[in-house]
Length: 306
Image (cartoon, rainbow, N blue to C red):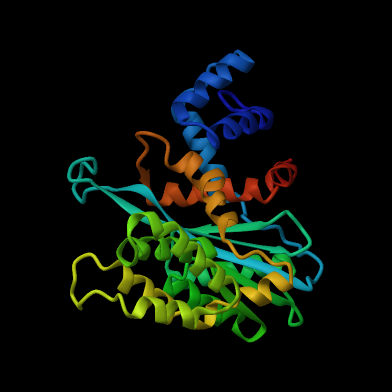
């Protein structure tokens, strides 16, 4: 201890609350549970300092996995870009930046490893590879990729794993495209039946039949709202990512809800609270901290600080 310093126990307490709540609410929680008054600024400094220092991933890797499930997705978080003058509060810009979250887990495990970055698609690709290696990726591992079909995600999957796995479009995203198309293809009372028929074809790898069904209803080019054309394009451009038969035969998931759920409990729960706008450096620090906690790095980090 030093004068006006914080014991490691107290640091751990304030960072724990600061990682879960706004810094103001964290100060209230520390006062309520421990009877200690800690300033909001002190909580902010300790929390973000821990986020800058903590590693998202452990040094050691899991045992090699026979099959690895990997997913990637992006979510928008609010960030603030300071002004360029002496008073950086003036001229600040409020905007949204994409935080990219990836995960990997062996198919026989429920525990995933996560990685998150505000960096470029290339940075996200590198992180995805690192997370997968820590989760058990080897040169003999089969990699089952899942996602919404964003071109950059498919490209990065192929860059990292293309020779030893396959990428599958999230079944529910495809279903949403088909449900939208149904509003133009069928009258209202037949739309649900038509969508279910197309879903059945999708699960039986009969995408050619779906495309033919859509073809005769395509809207004219340059139509402002063209859900049939959108569904046709979405499927035809990703025809090699629709092997649901093989995925189901191998008892592998066909939906990417795992990473979408992770957005909520790993990132959005803290970074998208009401009224929060983040400096980009601080946002990455909080991403590090939240991801490390999801990866069960919390106790290990504080042991090292002893």
